[in-house]
Length: 567
Image (cartoon, rainbow, N blue to C red):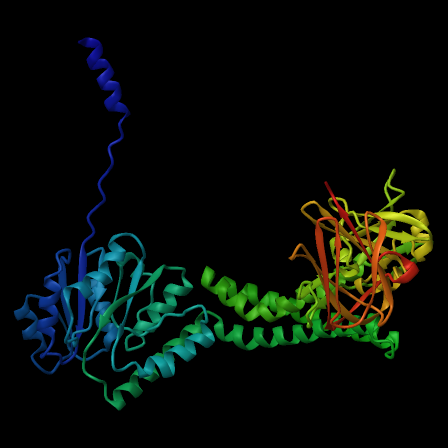
């Protein structure tokens, strides 16, 4: 029994008891000015919310029976001798409250429900946010749409609430101590801006439809003036005017400098009729302007960030600095391209930029409709591969070649293989091939030049279908010509579809297993049929709207097609 109690004691000591969450008291502050018709109903609705501990109505100098109605409904009433404004009423209420969470609700809402009140406060009770502000459907909202949103979008673009002037919100009291309460209608937007700049989490909660008295035009004018004053004041306080004005100007001038550098480099390398000296001068002027204003941007940004650091400011920084950042990236890409094309040989630095080719097929050719290919760098074949040409897949597509196809050059046949891992744009050739094609190591070849380099080469391209191999032969031509399409049917089943150039009325030979079987004279809409053993073969030819560098072998140039049936 003794050991039982000892073990039980150790087990109990190892169990950590979870400390219950401290209960958070909730207070609802209701600012009221001449709201005798609705204040009592608002108080009664709030009293139905189980977790509300305190209801305070701040009677902001009312001239009617607002105080009596609020007291009758069961609220604590704090009176202002004169009307001080909504912001002052909210400030008085939260300072007099001893609760942990405070919600602010207008006194003129006709259709307030306890569920609306609960939806405002629960996210804070659950620890999801520090502040909640409401959004709701209503018939008004003119000041929001015509004044608040445009100004916020200009000075505080990271703030994107649907209703920044909603009027109803809740917050932790500790958080409210960090916020500067405006004394008038600017209090709502001021809280939103302060929370954003200070990095306080704020959540917009949809509470449904709200019905209250429509403000008169004079009241809307007053409200708009106070909202504008608050937003402009916060923009000055947090350096957003500087960001839009001074930093905006510096950024524009920095972009001008960067654009001049890009223009100068483009002129140096790609515009032949402009003297080299002009391009250099443009680049130097651009560099000086860009450096001067980028330094100014950095200094101003640091000063501004010190005033109001926070993630929200960084978001605004990114938005306003974005054009300059893009210009810098473009310039760096250009410079890296030129550096990558630099060669130093025998005391001479040569920069020869080469670009990829954008290939767009706008016809009915059976290839990818769009791709980006090249450029390719010439290199020597690796050891023990003197009879192979290693070629990138993009180059194969351009020449209509596949892996294991062959290229005949100078009476010798070379097998085509794919590039090695890590060499995506390297074109490796045996020494004899480089001599025949007049290229050398390190030479950079654009995709469009491949047809010129391989002009006259005889290609044997293979198609595999089950136990059948079909090889077509064609010459690569440096000039594209009108092409045709042909389709092979084996025993009434389509097995090959290809395209290339035929010469009208020229003879093309077909063989099986390397032995001549038949031939035909080409013309459009031709169908060639023949039988071999148990197989029925039909070749259907049709014209196309496309061009091709593939010139099919005719007459004594070799067999156009060679069939090999495996047993």
